[in-house]
Image (cartoon, rainbow, N blue to C red; front, top):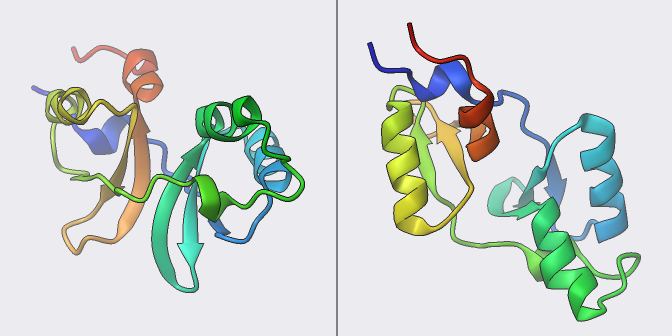
Length: 127
């Protein structure tokens, strides 16, 4: 039987407002042991920022982490997959869009987790 996204995804999703400074976001990622945060504009999800985004889009561009906001570097294209999809479908979607993470939603399109390449790589193989 194929592994499902729900079986390997990370259920802990951390939301931070778009005005959060990058140094605060990096500290939150460190403290939570995660590599990404969902960026919000009020009650609405507006993007995603990864630890790699902070390095590539900010640090490498000499943007100061104490005064640069998440909103200014976030990826605004939000890619989602349902938790009932197979891991193979998630991998295909990641390859097709050249991304390393997907937001995971339930049937009502409510975010319930995030699946990353590392979640897939570290998950036990299906029996």
